[in-house]
Amino acid sequence: MSLNQDEKLDTTCSNQDAGAKSQRTIFAPSEKDLGDGFKVNRMLPRNREGRKMVGPFIFWDHMGPVEVKKPEQMAVRPHPHIGLATLTYLFSGGIMHKDSLGYEQPIRPGEVNWMVAGKGIVHSERTAPLEGIVGQHIHGIQSWIALPKEYEEIDPAFYHYPKEEMPVLQVGGSEMTLVAGTAQGQASPVKIYSDTLYLVGDLKAGDEFELQLDSNREAAVYAPQSKIEVDGEPVDAKSLVIYEVGECLKFKVLEDGPITIFGGEPFPEDRHIFWNFVSTSKERIQKAKEDWKGKRFDMVEGDDEFIPLP
Image (cartoon, rainbow, N blue to C red):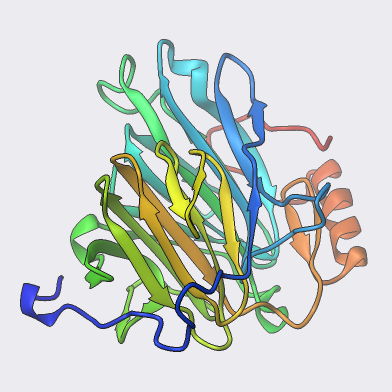
């Protein structure tokens, strides 16, 4: 669903003084090689810089673009999660999701796979079962959204949302897909548990984006392939620009490409993270480690492989 062209929303930052600079932090790219030439840019958590989260987002991996030349090039074996929800969003290619609840769901560009780990789930992500995927490019974002303390131990669940169900907003003169959460009076169908903002759009060089953040929200801009300009300064692609709570989120696009904006209301409690486990409790993470080592998680049916505890 989308708004009509004459229903463009006024998102300008009325409370910002002319010429004033935003309160923002810029993190440079942080590339990691996961093996078989499959590289990701891991922007959250940034433990070295002391930045773990942006709103409820605690993990942000930009994968690709990479040409899949062999089926095993992206074959993430079964592994566990607790205390979070995962969201996979693709710009190109396809991935097959399988989990311990019995769900087997391919994801294509523009769709959303939303997996709620809660008290515990196991899943795998592979390219091999998808028809025609070898020789294509995988390009997308994988993120984790920490659950509020009162929902950390809910039952696990999995949801798939087709591209057609995602709202399309005219925000600041640009068309953006509302992947999750709320923005400008619209709501994504994705089942969230806390205040969340997640927008994705293909912007053109010269586009200027401006969005006044709510007084309780912080947010970040991530441009996977293009430079942007913030407060008159160029920012390289694959950099993370974080705007503080209630700031004017404003930038200019210098090159064509996808732009992602994400964040929400920060949690009052700190989150501990080890491997694929997130929790407000160190003891709960220790229990998850012991349960995985002791093979007490429900596993993905028909898949004997798994990733050992590091």
